[in-house]
Length: 491
Image 1: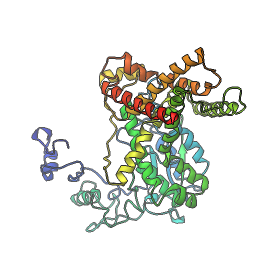
Image 2 (image 1 turned 90 degrees about the vertical axis):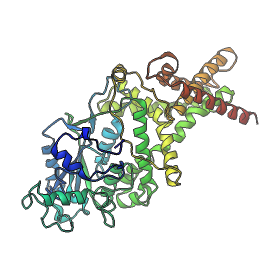
Image 3 (image 1 turned 90 degrees about the horizontal axis):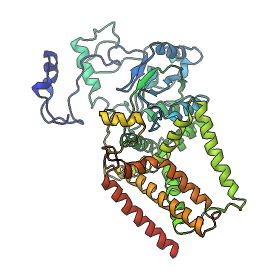
């Protein structure tokens, strides 16, 4: 794909040579011939159950299809059951879960809650679909797992089952190429009313959401043994870039005519619509996160009090909110099988995402909508070298590249460290510490969470350290932000 041609060295058999005959020089990722050697299930098998898996996911338990069929064949559920979503789990997570790759809230805690309504959302892999859910809404005729009507493909005379056509017949392969081609769905309902829904980088969220809106219900299957295992990103840039892509895709649904706030709450109930809205507007967390990452600290540097002092009764409201929020968060995490160490990594990554991927996601979405840029779908890299693997196993953050995502991260870390040191020194020498206690506490809490960033900026010399150009840019922008706030307070 990168060279735009097929070299003779890449062809290792007569079968491959025959397959690549139609690949002329100059092809791209967006424009290249369709190549199929084996089955397109809608044309050949027309199986009543479809298993969706990511390319880096493999089966870890051969009994899982039987578990899924227990739900899909349940006479009380089958007529309305669109899919059975199995818990998404990963292999190779280190003992710290450094980048919060388990995503326990997204893949375990929230699905359990949604399962009490109309069912969990679709998360892209490890999902057993009732094929009828791709064709229409639920009805009494779809109460069993019988195959849906065959695809309407010109010149295709078979009825869509393996009984009438052999899998490798020339006719089947020709039709399969036609069905898999980029133009098959033009002027049809594919991608809009049928099959997987197009129009969002988060097509899994969008597809499951639209199926719920059509009246389907879903089930969350959470076996003790992992059903499927996938790979995780092992550098911070890859983890944040993946999350940013999700944010862009979710906003594409949030600001469409199918927004969960309007369309969803009227079609699937208020609570279920709000559950989907929680995901759709995920990236708006960047607003309060950025505010708490910068404003109290800059006010502290300018000796400006933002919060009640310790002796003020209102101070206890902030104490209650902090302890209550974090207390429930820890409780939910531990009940779902987590540990304190993994919870710490999870809340730290939540703050990191809040000022990086959550911040850049809306920016990129806005630019795409106004025509200033076009988002490409970049698959998250799961390939690592020996040094990255060593750092990950040791729980060391991997930076290494001058990513724009790191700039606000370093800015927050720098401003919080300076504010904490200056504020603590001032409080010990001549300030009244109770006046600035809340701002000092917030700065100190961020400083503790930012230790991996300070380490990468000042103490490490390996390839995974923070690039010097990122540190310089961040320091310059942090200085400008401080001056802006300084003159604002003086005015």
